[in-house]
Image (cartoon, rainbow, N blue to C red; front, side):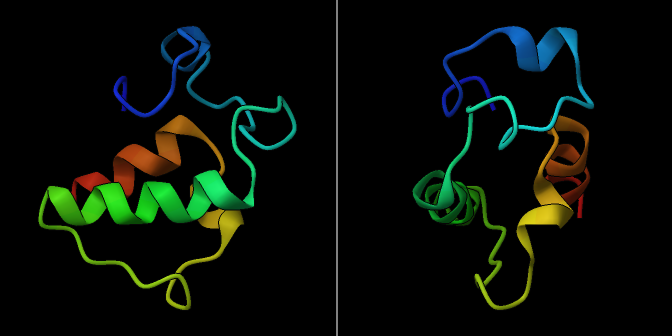
Length: 65
C-alpha cells in the first residue's frame, strides 16, 4: 500500500474513506486494481465496487484473499 499512497494517514487511520479525503479518485481506483495484479491478485473493475475498497482496511482484506 505504501508504494501506492503517498500520505501516511492510511497507517494512522485505517478506516479513513480514501475518496472523501481526496486520496483516491476513479483513476486511482483502477490503478489500485492494476497494482494488485502485480501481486498476483486479479480483480476486474467489474468485480469490485469502489465502496468495497474505499478504506485501507478494506484494501488489506482484498490483498489477503
